[in-house]
Length: 70
Image (tube, rainbow, N blue to C red):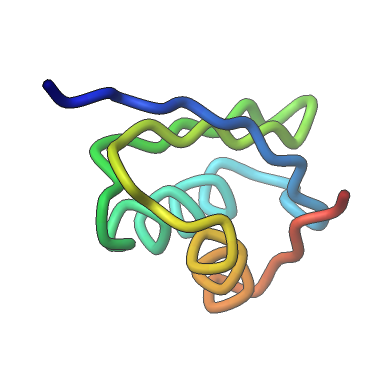
């Protein structure tokens, strides 16, 4: 039985739809991620999948040029 996990992170520095698309694209490539959605106004990044690691998501956000804040 597989369990899909959803976690929400707060990302700083995103100011436009291009920013959100960059973060979504990078995070979608992380192993175990089946979907990523950004709410630009709040900076919320919701990630869904199975077995993905927080550190890998944070690294992908940084690859896109942004930062996850605690």
